[in-house]
Length: 253
Image (cartoon, rainbow, N blue to C red; front, side, top):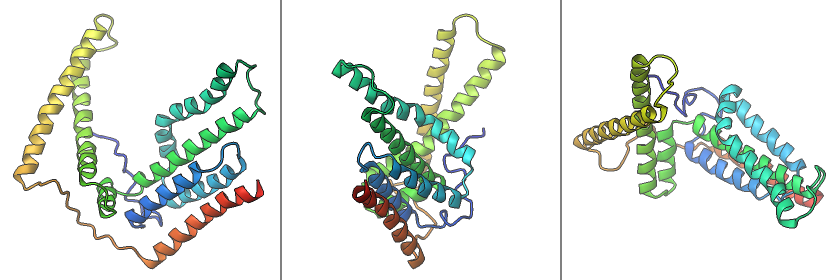
């Protein structure tokens, strides 16, 4: 079965891909913190944040279509969070619905830009590095062991669930070609139960095989992480540029 991996473009040779995963993780966390801390209602700084994020995306050489497809998964939640703010103002203040020039809509746009830019940065993080390298880098940064193990196992087992879903769908389609007209709930319910049972059984077999080969909760990696001076310099420069936008907006606006 063919699956769409979240790190399918992690083998591209680009300046962003060559960065140490620890630096990339720290960079994304700091940038998200800077963007989220931007005072609400100030919209102009997000244009500069956007230019910085787009520049990073272009340097990574990740296809724009791939980024947009990933954004579609979370975009409805971001839109709901941003649109519900002016609606809540209208409901709780018992006033007329605010106009587009109202401060409530400025706050709504701020929420939208904060969420969108943060998600893009996170997508870039997991798309420019192998998932197990990100986990290993986070472990080196003293991330709790249990979180690393759960994340690594979840990433591996999610493809088992997806694989069984494809197999059961193929089997159902071969027996009942075309659209189902009767007993849809029963058929899909039985299919979901079968997917869960087969995935559970297969996951147990895989885990037992891992234990028999000496798995003790640690995922070994063949990659040796080494932070270069040039990477530290570029990392510092990029963070300073984000901070300049953040502090500059406070002074000018």
